[in-house]
Length: 244
Ligand code: HEM
Image (cartoon, rainbow, N blue to C red; front, side, top):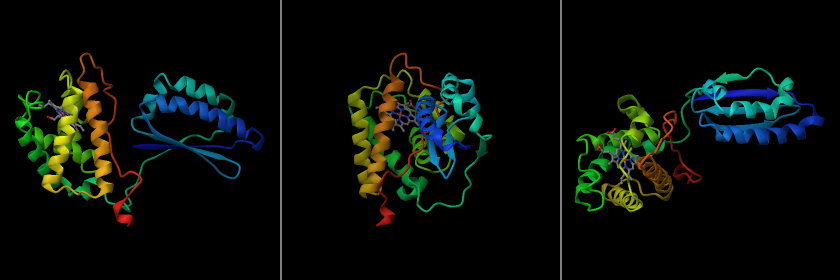
């Protein structure tokens, strides 16, 4: 993840026009898959833009969203300093990751092994998984662990997001099968003792809803997922158990 900061020394009488221009420019950032997040902050006499890139920002500069983005800001380019590139520095976290809260690799292995033992017994899911790789449970445990803030095990060994998407192509997963996958996994989570506090479970279910709906989309005939899409990462939502 790379973060870019750009300072704009905008004169007070042009501040309103600058904010309006950035609001329009932001639509092009939002549409660019390389841009993970952005923020405009205002100080005493200047603005600072923070752009957080999920992928190489040079990809954005070579892509279709760059020209309309810069066009919106053309009148303000003279006020901009050179963008400064930063990388996050690990200074520890004030909070556990979802991965740590769940119980780490061991918890995900236990969950997925129990889940895929049940899958062949399920009339809706069994046909889809009939030719399943014998290490499937372990691979999905690596995937979930990485998404929830654990080590990059899936990216290192199975090709990251592109690898996972490729293994759903052409599977034609139905909405009924998706719902069953989620409900069977949640039942299994209860049975293996995954944390059941409301905060953890709401974040966990949030990811499962998103991830399974994406899996359905990737599995449709003729689906053409974007190979540049980065590995998703999931964090706590608005509620955190360790804050009491
Ligand atoms: C959050 C949702 C999901 C996640 C995280 C997930 C994760 C994965 C991963 C990581 C793989 C590749 C494993 C490998 O590297 O070998 C995979 C494959 C597969 N997934 Fe999913 N999946 C999800 C949803 C679903 C759903 C809803 C279905 C069907 C109901 C499904 C059916 C399959 C099938 C059939 C394969 C290929 C298995 C094989 O033949 O080895 N997935 N999934």
